[in-house]
Length: 295
Image (cartoon, rainbow, N blue to C red; front, side, top):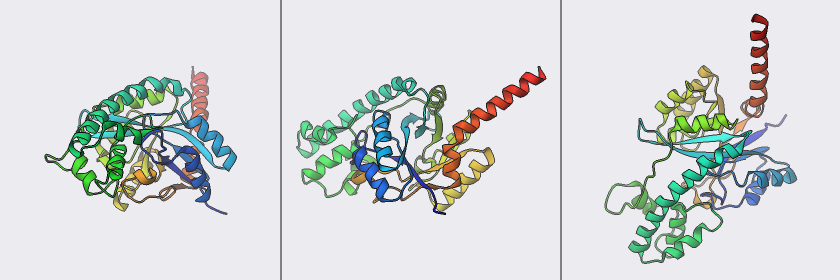
């Protein structure tokens, strides 16, 4: 029997990906994926269309969103994945607030880049057409087309956004706390998963969120070493968390060369994920029936 495969972390042109939703679904079909999740940053706008396109292609598309957070204790960035929210409208205010915060930071970086490299701000803005915001990748795309670099995420990207020094133009916005975002996802009836803990070094945050009812952890991700993945799998088993994974696909805007489906979950982990909400409802009903008998 063939293994059912799912890539539960993909970004489209609506956020910081270079590929449209229709193309993502078509690529997933070509790669033999059964399930994908569109998890654009702070944006659920494309989920309905993606689901319809998936049905036509024979690919199940899971509604999702990757919500930006800032851990006040560690000062680190944190990303929370929300899947299958029963009430997605309850996340709209949070996502809108995050988009405004990100837009302000993006505009400052854009102006710094425009001044430094002698290109117009409008030249940069044209690269984010179709997106809900202005991202670092759009700035780099403009610089690449202006002949300032030949890659999106190469030496110049590191100089501008990662390395300390006079050349750094990065603005790191402050987003809501992961605790408040977890609560918002729970109120929306979604599945809350901590995204790529290894990427930002969010292992301490993971421990805190588990105590607050976190549903799962993304163990399979390009940023996770084999040791990281094995540790996350042990934590998931110990605390009965869902295990998710995905390529964090961004098309040409990815920080590494990464195809859709390069990282995925398979068989039991995917089955556990797809049946998680129904299983939780059954457990809740059994608990309510037990309490009623004891009363």
